[in-house]
Figure (cartoon, helix red, strand yellow):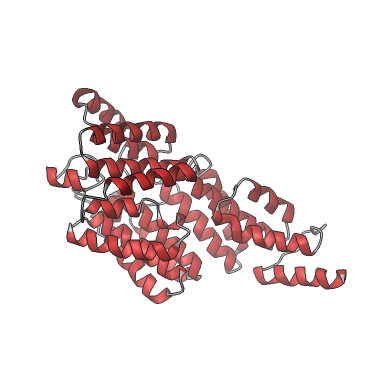
Length: 368
């Protein structure tokens, strides 16, 4: 997949990326296996120096985000926003505002600033009518990061309609995955997983940008984890393996980190603790300097495993680094319940999630 050469100027103005055709070897690798992002970044800097187009800065901001250089990405996105707004290109400026919001949220863990920038993006589109940019701004975060799943389901459904009206396969793919994840979380498992599978089928076609494809993969594994569907997770991970996307592949750190964290959590749920520990440790190492979502997920999932193993002090230490992110709340609640019911165990005591509650109740009864 070549990041950069637009098919035509209409797509340049309606898509958040300047996309090129998939390579001759198409398939999932074309979507997820990123090109030489470092070289592409240098090329963009050279182009901007020659042309001065803020749209080039916006693309550079996304690349900086994907390689986890959040400070550089933030500077580029804010500069792009100012330049696009000054040129009167409100739709592109709205995308730049959403990019700033995303970097603040996922890269710098400043949710207050992030919400302000997403609001700014919506304001810029207020008088623009129906447009594909509205879908991208409303779905500015990966679905896994959104706490209000009811709103996510509604916004994603609207984004699917916009994507199909304006023939934006990247947005359609992402919106289907976001909507599917929201429905799964709301208890509509079959309906949600049907949308998830459709989104992954689009990714498998090799027709979508790596940025969208990575988010779809994140939502897919998260949906499988939330519904406890290990078989479906294994099936889609086999697809990744078949096209050569492997854990040792340095081109896919975003996908790898999230997949390992979510898959490790699933393995933990079904009692495969050794395999879970391997996956979660790899995820924690790979995502140490990456997206805050991935760091929190890795730590909270590993903390959950430690809790099940009776290693409460280690669980507490892992959770201490998660801040107040909602992704860590379920494990933090388990730890709090056990700690409140009785002192931390002096010796390791393996336990399942159900047993955690049982032990706590046993301690409470003894204390009466």
